Image (tube, rainbow, N blue to C red):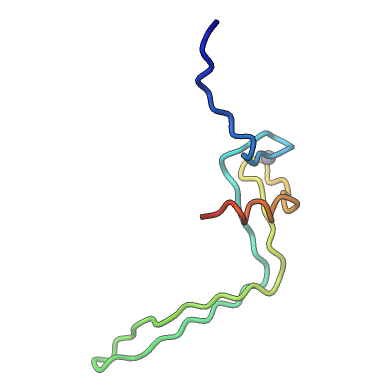
Length: 81
Ligand SMILES: [Zn+2]
């Protein structure tokens, strides 16, 4: 009997439309990006902090067929490290 070496991770997310399980896009609508700079003695600027605020919806899109996978977004977010 051949040995089964493939580890199948049942937690992997895959697109129900095309089966893609590698490429995904997260798309945010209405994003306000605020960046704080301080000016240095020599007139150059240093970035202090970068704040982005998402006002609209965040969608998860399949990288292959562009299907809307937003229903999986919560699960996606939990698996982003
Ligand atoms: Zn797809």
